[in-house]
Length: 205
Image (tube, rainbow, N blue to C red):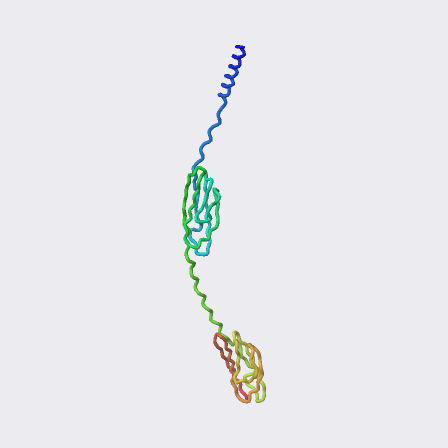
């Protein structure tokens, strides 16, 4: 019985020594403190109604947020999003780890009033022009008909004097007339931009 007890003691002490020789797993190093890698706005100054982008990056953080908006954001190493503030705004990025350690950084986006655009000046209406006013002959015999042709641009009203036609003249055309004496025909083209006049003299033999 003593031998059996001795062997049991030796066996237990051997196991104990073998257990003591097994290597212990190394302790896990403590996590680093939370840090802000970058935090910037592009562009940093905008006109009201325009947009900018905010980019940020954090590490060793379990939570992150940007105030006043959008609030909670993913704790990523690099992320950007669009903003459209209506007034100059200061943005604060904060990052916190699970142990409650916290870091923060701020930036400001300047918002200015949009530049007033100069009022477009109303363009003056084009001046009407008589581009041609011709007669088929400068001299004719009595009771002979002369043909007068004309062409105008940018005219809203065309008149001939003496009034030899009983209809409103179009912008261009031809008409005939048999004057009884020497006659000077005056063509007048008018419009919003002014008036233009030309004359054609006809001699009656």
